[in-house]
Image (tube, rainbow, N blue to C red):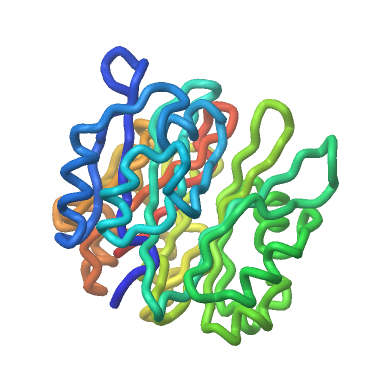
Length: 313
């Protein structure tokens, strides 16, 4: 099974905190040459894709690398990578890390990664900045000509929630306004991640996952309990149709426990290639379902953890 996202990288401030250095990567062997180039790269503030996300203070997406500020164009093209999305993680105004996701291209590639934006001075709706759609041309056309008010569609609902959101069974979800086009091409799960900036602007990154080329095999959202002593499961979606809500009923993850609890303790995103070294209940459940790798993104607001989004490969 090929996943829609081919490479996940972490970029972290070096010891001077003036540049970003390579902090790890999830990728199969076919991307080893691209990984080798990345391992030795450094990005200054506003340089390359990671530096651009740092300087802008919000996610950025590049749907073509040539003639852009992207620094590793030849190697990316050689590896068949076609799109990059950089997700910065800030605690207040200070950068913790940047996670970069790369998509690949082939004929059967269905799914989407989108970046939406609202500037309240210009509009009360959210419009598409850019997106990568693989082979879903009609869906792309409609998305580029759709705007979402707050609370409507996946971008608008994520905006209203101010927290990550998972919508399952999109072909039945009337709350997903593009459900007809989505069901025609097999998109069945949507995940939204919100970012708000000091100027009251809101950005939402959406992942639209299809059964044939899923973004990930399982998504989970964990949130602090009311006393902020543990993380509890909020929602999830599994390509194997596991009932995650009953699986995690009354189960918790402690601060600092495994990759998910670690993201809360450190404020840092994480990638873990070997789930067997993670002792949390979530890792045990994923391993039992045949999943070996995890990507963890903390969602931080006003320097407090709002939620942890995890996905498994």
